[in-house]
Amino acid sequence: PGRPPRDQDPFYIMFTSGSTGDPKGVVITRGNITAFVEWMLAEHRPAPSEEVILDQTTFSFDVSMMGLLPGLAAGGTMVAITRDDVANPKRMYQALATSDLTTWVSTPSFAHLVLRERGFTAAMLPRLRRFLFCGESLPPETARQLRERFPAAEIWNTYGPTETTVATTSVLVDDACLARYSPLPIGRPMPGTRVVALDPELRPVPDGERGEIVIAGPNVSPGYLHRPDLTQRVFVRFEGQPAYRTGDWGRVVDGLLFFEGRRDNQVKLHGYRIELGDVEAHLCGLPGVQNAVVLPVERGARIESLAAFILFPSRPDEPEFATASRLRAALAEQLPVYMIPSRWRFPESFPTTPNGKVDRQALAGGMAER
Ligand code: AMP
Image 1 (cartoon, rainbow, N blue to C red):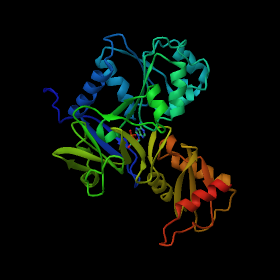
Image 2: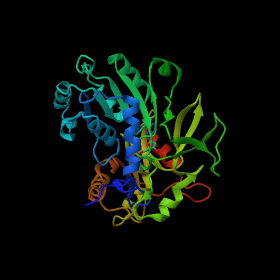
Image 3: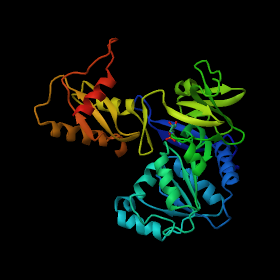
Image 4: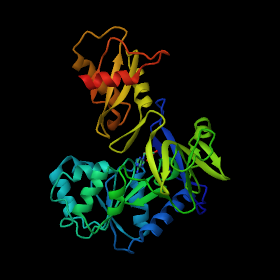
């Protein structure tokens, strides 16, 4: 109170899953958010006071900021689709049909869900002029269906972690892009920001080769709240600018960046960022559990749910489903619902690799066989 905010002041702190079970608070400053909002306004040129923007993503996930902040800065109107609406498809489509949206902001997973309704077309939303996607891979098939149903609307794929303020790269997915690339590119950096693929010594790899995506510029967070140890590990400097090591693999082809998966055990489930180690740490903390491994259950390129493999020193004297529902309930007191595994297995032992680690691949293979 009593003084105007400065660029280095925190604007929001957003918590993301941490690999050892403690969420990490990502501090985003006013300077960070200013850089992001100015870019969005320059790239999309919203019509002053005319935009109607979808507000569907939970505010604890920074994709929500992509609609909210540039939208309000342009004098636009937010239309909320609530969790209850999403749980009741009839109500959700009614809410969408009366929304008069001009701008769609969501994860690709949400668009995939809404596309189940054949009536979700330009006839339902005649003013819709752009789809902005962020948070996870945009499957070409989702983009293709949207092109067909909304021929006048632009489709943008954007990419970036919470640590670099919502999104940092973007690309317009038009028919030429769809015809040429599968998987789709994640685009080019916003002006003033460098996004590069680096080798382990943080030297740029040649174009066309795979490296870790590092983002440098005014949108890079100062670090994790009260965690200098974690901050030091991934917040570095690159060519004189503050930079963040994303842990994402990437490759530059034709001047466009492509996302090629993670270096670690972080996954995206319906757009939510989850460290598998976070869920495992919480499971290992439950009474009687000796060890736990959590794996993604995949269908094609999409992760559908999580599977938990639990080891007990001695198996509880109850049916497996009773053990599963007891563990699920205990976990639900500690973790958000999207982090709770839906499949449960209770093997006698875990397969191990030659160097004695749990063989996660063998466990995953076993899951496919059942
Ligand atoms: P979050 O901090 O929740 O926004 O998650 C950031 C992570 O999501 C990134 O480091 C990527 O692994 C993934 N991600 C975000 N946007 C995209 C995208 N457009 N395509 C592929 N992966 C993405």
